[in-house]
Image 1 (cartoon, helix red, strand yellow):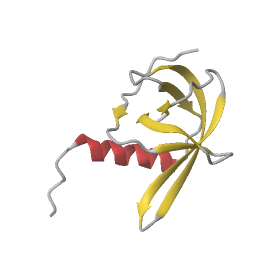
Image 2 (tube, helix red, strand yellow):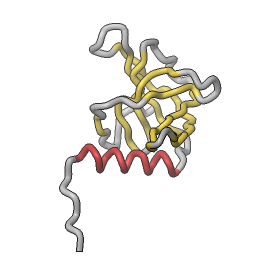
Image 3 (cartoon, helix red, strand yellow):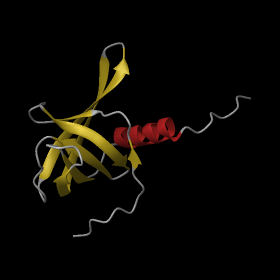
Length: 119
């Protein structure tokens, strides 16, 4: 199975919680993202080669949240530099358009590019 990353991932200085979409229980934090994958940071190791049902709950302000459910396969998992934490790489299976919008919004927000001049 091919596991080398083809698309640059963008590190996130703040972490969004990731939940199991079946139980709605937290399983970790979003470490980085790409259009077709993500890295999860968790306190338990993830099983490699297993499909997971993940849920992102994105705060939208005024107490509301945008829910993004994802089907993903764990490609790798290893111990993080932080003791008792694990990093796991996931390949997403047909991510919804909302996930692509999240990736683009995060890329723009964390790239620190100047805003375009208004006309």
